[in-house]
Amino acid sequence: MDGTLTPFVVGERSRLDPTGTDASWLDEGGFYSSRRWTVSQEGDRGFDTAYLVGRDETSGATGGLVPFHTASGGDSNPLYNETTLLGYTPDVQVLAGSRTGYDNRLLLSPDLSGADRVRLLTALCDRLLERAQERGAGHVSWWYLPEGEAEALAALPGFATVATPCLPTAVVRPRGASLDEHVAALPSSRRSLVRRDLKRLAGGGYRSRSVVADPSDLERYAPLVVQVQARHGEELSEEGAVRYLRRCLSIGGGEGAAAEDVVITEVLDGRDRPAAFALGIVHGGTLHMRVFGCDYAGGHGSSGEYFEATVYGPLRLALERGLDTVHLGVTSYRAKSLRGAELHARRTLFMSRSDRRPPVPAPDWGFLGDDERFLAGASSEVLPC
Image (tube, rainbow, N blue to C red; front, side):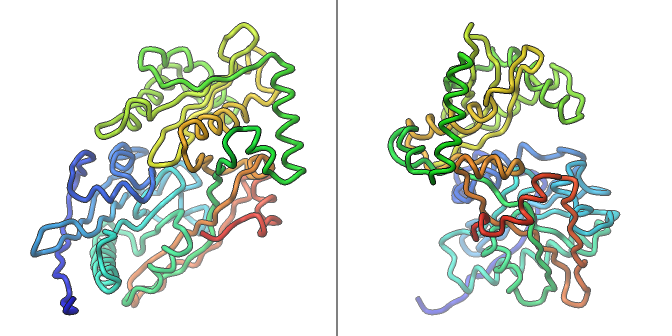
């Protein structure tokens, strides 16, 4: 090594190839920053997506990538809308990196030296703010970053930044070689709760199984998704539910993914009819839970079917496949924590040019109700990451 700095050039593109062999490391940071997930979000919820690409000018190798997403007024999902964190709605919002899934990463080649990482990330952020200004935004926001990655952005020269906590990510890590061993390794209070859940399910005649998602069999799950959405005050047709399930299937089973990467955990009643289900997508060593449905109209949903579909059944699958983690996303923190989930801290970072003050955060998570109250008193539960 002679200390020579790599010459980088930053370009822009409107589409991303999710199957290219160049820069396969882009998929190693996590599912919600992977190419197949990112591409699936292009145009979603009215956002315009583009990509800044940093390349080695000599070799042409990709050294870094920044997807960025622009929308007037922001996202209809308050968990990704700056209004929640600022107390007002910017005319234009520009979100950097991942804008769905509640996980984000800085996408830089692991082969870069420390000095090259700083130089390339600085160049990418400089172009990012230029593009944001052209679109009418005075700052950009990076949501759901691990604390270390938010700190790396804050340390870059030439920018003004401010970070604020956002919702942590809940994950369950299998312990032991079976669900019984996993439960036995939990603290006593949580062990007792899980065992009560499992006893109640068995007493209600329920059992579960995890199966590879079958494209021809998705229609039977759609009514269960519609019922869950109705409980959350959202209207969804069965046709819309089928479209979303097919979209999950295409994301998880896309080019370069194994057919068994999209899995459905069914909770069956005493007559072997689906009482509830959850769809998850395997990426790397993690099973990411994406969709839950329940047949409330059929009298189900009060015997622990949710936790069997989203936690216990997926844990059994993770143990069978030797997976490291089940990713449970955000919200329902108290219930998830009591059943063995770890909460990993995440931050949103606002960035502007150094001659312009970044916005002042004024977070309001009050609309989350029990979750907001739990997080306010559970600082010891949230792990740095």
